[in-house]
Image (tube, rainbow, N blue to C red; front, top):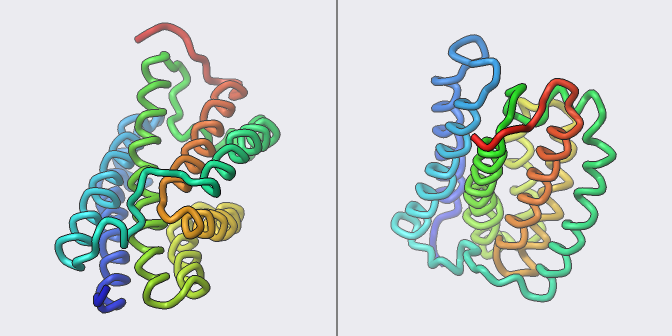
Length: 228
């Protein structure tokens, strides 16, 4: 791996800002934002897959000349990954059962604010989370983390990951930024000891989907019924 780290970090910042600004152009808070936010969040997640996933993968392999393994691509969990995914599958839904019914959570979740959900919308919402989070975790815990580990060592790589990941949540309030710090450290360590970003992806999916499902269940103004 002979890539200049400036090129890597610049690529990370440029790709993320380009995606974020694209979203702001179409869905600025004072312009073109429907109340139920269905179109907005599907656009957000699918464009996230294209920018954070497909584009960053292309940049990693064809511009920065990394191999797939050097950017944390691998679809095996190993003992460490299996253990933490199992812990997450038990602990995170339990945590969301406590957080989910709270007013502060229901003001923001589920992100899609439709009052009348069909099961088709529930399934599509879940699939969009999975697609988006696959790209999101590749971007932060693959494309960013593993080359930084090779260049700077584990400690500095996690510090860089924490800073950039927390800044990505800067517009979501103090509590989300604190959560981002913790989440970044934990998922970075799990990715390092697993050898890839796959476990981090699964854990993030469990967190996001359990929060959405539980929030939807407890939201006083939202109901699920019908097939389509």
